[in-house]
Length: 209
Image 1 (cartoon, helix red, strand yellow):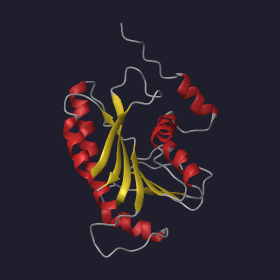
Image 2 (cartoon, rainbow, N blue to C red):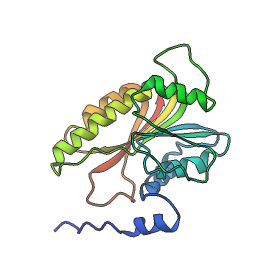
Image 3 (cartoon, helix red, strand yellow):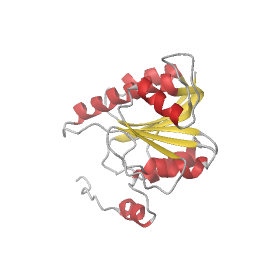
Image 4 (cartoon, rainbow, N blue to C red):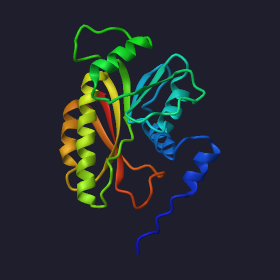
């Protein structure tokens, strides 16, 4: 029999004790321990950043000389206690609006109107609105992540890295192949903080071509 679905599991309680906004912070910490994708002084873009747990992890590691930029169409509570977190409530596909915002917080201008290449790392914990139909939800996850790969083509520096949450099912190669075309190495990883019954994994693209 499948394990019962317990919302208030140990990671949920641990997140509350450590003042993380969501249990997903521990997923990123496990990814960081294994792949070391976040480094001091980096500029990092977190896509679909609400409620902000990834930003909490990122801001601490990059330190005051880096910038952690969170973008979401939802409003994010700005009270993080980290001066290096910057928030924009906007669609991540509004590239020119994002560029104007980035310039306002100290990023430089770029000659190309479609390629800004500001970030050393892009992360995303995005998930589609679920239907309960595994195949449908998984393909929506793939489509969202393909769109974020397009964002990375615009905003991620050459040799930069990408972290994506993916619902894994039959169509996952529709995402894996484009990732391999754009990154020198692609790895799949399921952190222990993921719920056992979840189909989610994280795809880590290392070294943008």
